[in-house]
Image (cartoon, rainbow, N blue to C red):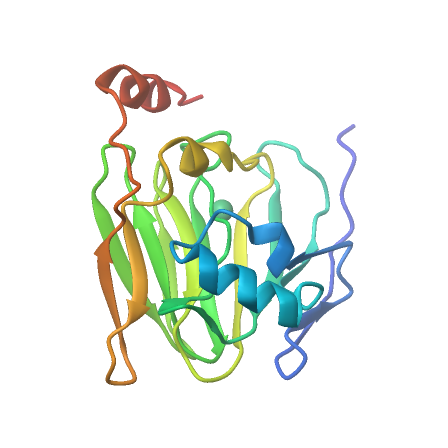
Length: 209
Ligand SMILES: [Fe+2]
């Protein structure tokens, strides 16, 4: 007979930006985010001030990594900029790229930056009570464009996995999210970006089990 999994109960601590009852937690410091920002000099000088400070944190509840199961969790990112570029997460495509994701704004404001393998860009504004659907096959990263912490809850299929290299190999994502000088944000071209080959795009699209 099929083994029934027990229901889970977690609580979202919006103020602390964490999931109570999580089974996993990981953090990223500024030092972990080397190479992501355009302004190397600004990165180095900020590193001297806050190398060990946690820039973002993920707490999640992962019942299993089985196909058909689901991972739920909370992500929290502090506000800040490296030069004029807003703090961001490393970003990824799912290792099984045809897996989707949902993000829900709890506190603060930011951007979900999405890129298709062919290099199309979408920017979705996140605020409290907005829900962002990340479709299959989109590379995604979150950016804190607000004055305070950005806290979101999320859910995605448990067998999705994460491939971070796809961004690194392309020299980053196609756009960077920078301060527009008026307290807002704007997306600009990333000068280091290299367009993926048709062969690589086809290879990613073929990974659809
Ligand atoms: Fe994801």
